Image (tube, rainbow, N blue to C red; front, side, top):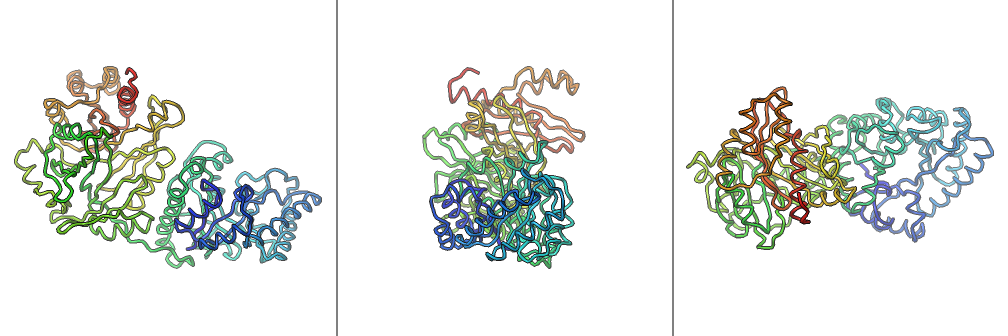
Length: 620
């Protein structure tokens, strides 16, 4: 499968975009006209630079408002088109994207369009060029892919074909199944874009909110299946208009884009085994059996280890070759704490270990999806946990199962046996597992993070939710497997409060227990500072659920929050934040499914006050 990306997807200069696309591993690029117009480099220099980088120049775009016009206007349009063919010859490229007319169309007649497009094709042939005709979803007379294809079929010229764009097709709700019956020789180019479901006009939706495949709500797997069935074997390109992408790091965005194409190709390969496109072969996703460990780094060691002790964790030991790492254990939960010294630096989640059946295959899949291996020296008698970097710079470890299937094959490196610590006193094992990891990301990288974990680990994305905070709406979305759950939050950024909150938005680890009251009571007795929940919350809780006063008094005593679904209950409390991290302890009763997000506005408001107080000295 030949991959390509439109330069409009990326930030920076045209030269920087070409470099990023090549470094990420794309085969080619589409040249967006404005990127060339503002470049100080000549077309010949751009052509030569692309060749040096090993990139093909696949498509020049866009050429607007060619058809559906009176003859005098069309003659001027042909003049414009000829100048572009001459430019393309200097660039060393041969295909141009022609969009259906939006602004100047006055003649609604397919016979006129066919005649005009045929004459444009004849002009293209004289220059050795090809025209890809695309229906814009908001085109005045031509706005569906089938209409554009019908026109191309009637033109019946070897230098005229159609361009299929997933956004223009799926944003209208059109059925892409007709693509499977198209003549592949008439499909000249394929552009892919995903998008979140939004209630707004198609044009602003397209210009500002497209995302890479797998990061939105379109069914691109089905769309790509129809393309593969048609027999198309040309470039598979990304065309993403997104304000945040054009502000983000160009190299990181390019890698995210290629990962999305590899993920989509992997999903399509199994649906169309005899496709003309050679899809990349990935190792099967390894369904995680659970979290093996969570790694924290802190410049506030005493604060973190004190909270762990208060929650019932015991110090297992120090790493045999890296004594700055210590392991804290309770039940099947293992927290690795890296002491960076008394710097006062914020506590952060820096690594996650997941238990998989085949750690080597899991790491191979991650690397195929453009994850970078972590350079690490593994000492004698130390486990190779195959770490890779996540997009945010944290590390993801793949841990093979131990004899009991629970991982922890690396534990001897810390000089202890978990059973020696947790089985001697049953009270210490009140916490028994990691329920989920809550990741926090800037708004422009949240979708990238979700795609990374879902593609590498074979997880599924749930529907997004928007929850209120004092700084604005927080976008939250879960990515889940049978045994492993993540949530990804994107804090608001568009105001002074939002910028502050996005910069300081905390991540957290949620621990699972069968008795939240026992954990809370023990923690309070040991001096744990919990996140204070306001009295108003409990008054509202009693009114919403009709809870007994005695029960309300009991959960209020320990700052425990409560949620209920049709099938169960969720009781949970939060520690006060230490830096940008905190712990949550949760008890699920019955078949409750979820993460207690009904209580998120309460938590966010309380943490916002605490963070403002800690960082800026502003009264709560």
